[in-house]
Image (tube, rainbow, N blue to C red; front, side, top):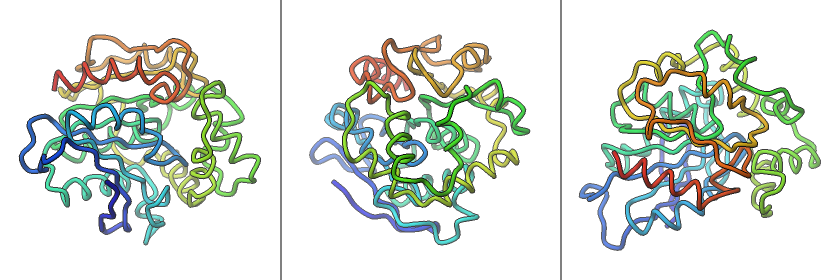
Length: 277
């Protein structure tokens, strides 16, 4: 079920999948919130929503300036980790969901970590394609791999060719490509890319590396073994306070979006993580 939710940032589009008759305020199992990556949309989690939505409430949200959500009312306030996290928390408050698990891909994972810094409502987190970095940005060079597509991450204006290339690279060059992936990149408010990257380079928001090293809540990591944007060795070197399932999972034959490229393997990990929360 798709609907719009009013927040101080803008009108946000959400998709809700839940067992028939289940109410938000009376949930047998912890709801799951899915947050997509830069220049993507909530439909990228279709293969998780279809599976887990039969068992528990699942909510996927288009970030401000993305998908079917409106552009931000105040771009400088909304298009950064702090603003995105606040927007996500406002939606969950409007839905009267007091406790939930977050699955965040790439930018969505960074937002999930920021949400943990802002609220105790987040009971656990799975990140994919997301390297937690320190607040001064000094980890950037180690956390990310140099590539042409990484250079597009903060670029405001895309040509049609750049949009198509970015969509294919982020969701896996060898993965099934569907038209909505490219459409999502072209639809994204370009200011969201530029302002988000500028804020990240200034070190705004929670010190993500410190949070994952000190916060007792479980954090899971599920990356593609062939990740082309994030340095998996950097992730393996981090000292998580509570690394869910006891290891960083590297999914074979997958790149930056293993939940899309290898959904069956990814879903097995996610099932174990949310079942433990």
